[in-house]
Amino acid sequence: MNRIFFTLVLIVMMSGTYAQKFENLALTPPMGWNSWNTFATNINEALIKETADVIVESGLLDAGYEYLVLDDGWMAMKRDENGRLYGDPERFPNGMKALGDYIHSKGLKFGIYSCAGAETCGDYPASRGNEYIDARTFAEWGVDYLKYDWCNTAKLNAEGAYTTMRDAIRAAGRPIVFSICEWGDNKPWEWGKNVGHLWRVTGDIVNCWDCELGHGSWTSWGIWKIINMRKGIRKYAGPGHWNDYDMMEVGNDFTDAENRSHFVMWSMLASPLILGNDVRSVDEETLNTLTNKEVIAVNQDKLGIQGFRFLNENNIEIWLKPLANDEWAVSFVNMKDKPVNLEFDWLKHEMKDDLNNRSVETGNYTYEIRDLFKHESIGNTAKPLKATLEGHDVLFVKLTKTHP
Ligand code: GLA
Image 1: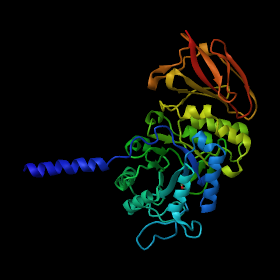
Image 2: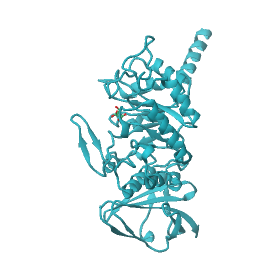
Image 3: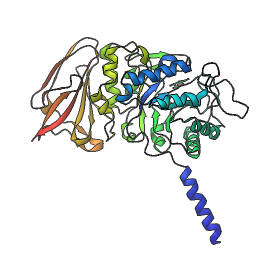
Image 4: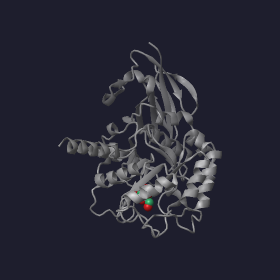
């Protein structure tokens, strides 16, 4: 009797070890590059290697962009004779392991894509029914990050399907950041924390300020549509488990001002910062934005608190994000495409984050105001902040307590 009891306890304990995601990954929002927004399924070995080289040479890796993620379209149209996925032999002639080795040799991490359905969104073979063999294959190739999509899943239960892949990754034994991509359809923020490290909250992004683009059965969304789509989800984000507002469109035909605003908002949302542009042809101003260490530091703040809308006044969106050491990030985005004047009296507003019980104590303290694009102090909170914001531009500041 005792033996049966202890065997049962042992089995339960062992299954417990498997039934967990890898912890201590993505303790700050993951940063990297993904092929989809610019290249869709037109990806190949030369493009990926050139991208890896440029990420390193341009300073993007130093700024924190470490995951190089191949999205849909890398795989051959059929599994091999052992039922394993492999890279399209024409586009990836040296195979995925060699490509992963190259990516690692550059000091980057290797990300790959699959899907919970039998086929990907681009109709390539995917992982349904092959989760364990695919997770083992990815682990053998040295994969560090798996984006796992949701096309062709019929009536699959989302939490169940993603949990199966989580367990398969665990069983394969290599710590892999698990990126849930089911577009927010099944409220992944409610169950994703124990399953993956980030979850997409909307359908696909498109490079416009606030448009919707219909594609028949689905729609893609401009950046402000994405920002505004889900209410009340910030409480689900934190170290190791993030709301993912999709790969960025910074550098994809936006004005410099729009690039700045988009980047600031993704930082305020504590969203993963995944580049979606062609880094080989990035212009200097866009690169300056993307490598702005002070903005990135807001996104990567160790508290991992997602920011929130504080006010929308006079066409200016004002957002707050509490940071470590009682600092705050504050963004002022001009929603109009013409200049507007900003005048913000710190002493007349009660700036509070009820969820985290934190407040900007302008009554008791003066805060120094640092402009995170000019990289200098622009005064303090004793006086109203005055500025002219160009169309769709942002003023992005950090508040630091100076004295009572
Ligand atoms: C879905 C995802 C995108 C991309 C494509 C690939 O639409 O949401 O991010 O991965 O599939 O086909």
